[in-house]
Amino acid sequence: RRVLDPDKITWVEESTVHPSEHYTEFRMVPDHYGSRMTCTGHYRFEERGPALTEQVVEGDLVIHYPVVGRLVERAILTGMRQHLSEEARLLERRAQAQS
Image 1 (cartoon, rainbow, N blue to C red):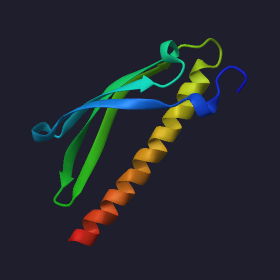
Image 2 (image 1 turned 135 degrees about the vertical axis):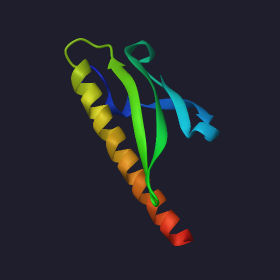
Image 3 (image 1 turned 120 degrees about the vertical axis):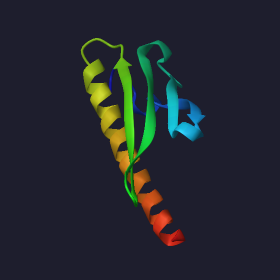
């Protein structure tokens, strides 16, 4: 917390969506600490059965800060995983309500 303010570890996601391929490329642009964070990747949706779709995310996240960089990376990834899980649950509920 002395080195990186958790409230300032925020970013804007720039995405290029390829709907016909069920594929999205993304880049995270930091609001603060611009030269300290790089994050790029892509995600895609893959059919896993008649009523099951899986979102597969691949990318690279690097926090360029001595000593604490890896800890910050892990914290951000944990938050991203939680967010994606919550988003998946919401989408599932919405799909069930529409069927």
